[in-house]
Image (cartoon, rainbow, N blue to C red; front, top):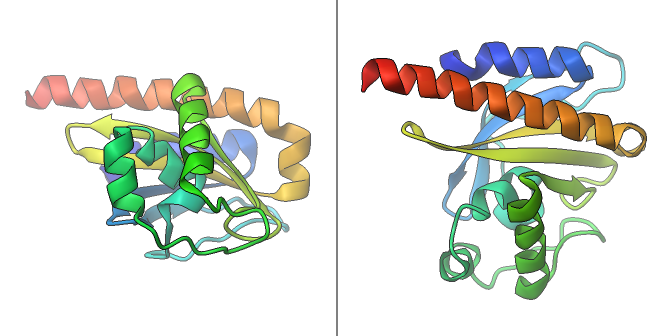
Length: 172
């Protein structure tokens, strides 16, 4: 999957001049499996294999939006860790955020996981598994460019779905 999506993740990073990560769920955590780091001075550099709670990350919430409410409750459980003052603290709050993801196709984390870092993500539900693609941005810059980032993310998602569909058709 990484080989298949890498060119489009690199394009997203180039088009936004921001860091992009590919992740998947590992239990109740989001595990980063690949990233493309922006080539600018002030940038976000994720740690490979870094595990963060699904409920606090945009990538995690994008993946949770693929699940039914009962499964979200089971996956998240009762262990709510407050990573920053902005972290989601209750299941009703999380379920509302997930509803928004289902409506828009995009999840947003405004400093809920790491102070000063905002992220935007979408989920990919493929024959190869479920993945999230996230844009990781210093919060000050995120606020200024959120609408443009959203447009670029949706374009990337469409391109990835087309590319994965081609491979599935060839291998199917």
